[in-house]
Image (cartoon, rainbow, N blue to C red):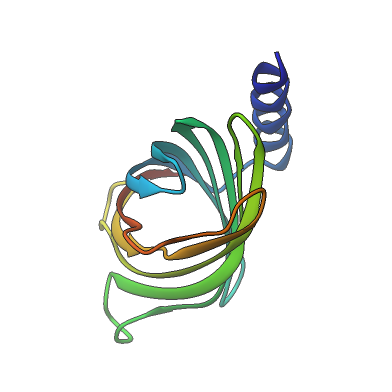
Length: 142
C-alpha cells in the first residue's frame, strides 16, 4: 500500500511540473533495473529524476550542474551531477549518487538517447556501495 501511495504521489508530481523530457532508463540502479526518466532543463544545468522499479521502488533526484554540448555545433551533450538516491524495499534506504553521461539529441525529431554511469553509496538503512550503475536512457522531448 505504501508503494502505491508513493507511485501515485510521484506521478502527480511529474504531471504538475510538466517535465520537459520523459522516457525510460534501462540498466543497473540501486536495487532496480528499469526507471521512468524525467528531465527538467535549465540554461546550463538540469534536474534529472528517476522512479525505478525492480526490488522495490527507488527515487533518484540528481542535479546535473554541468550540461553542455561537446562542441558548438554538436548534437552530442555531456553531463555531470550529484544527488540523492532512495529505495523503498523491506526497509527504507537512502544515500548519495553521482552521474556522468553522454547523450545525443536527434535533429528534426523530439528524441534523446544517452548512456550514463551512476555510482552510489547508501548510508541510511544499510551501508552499501553500488559501483555498477551503468544505464541507457531514451526520452521524448516536449
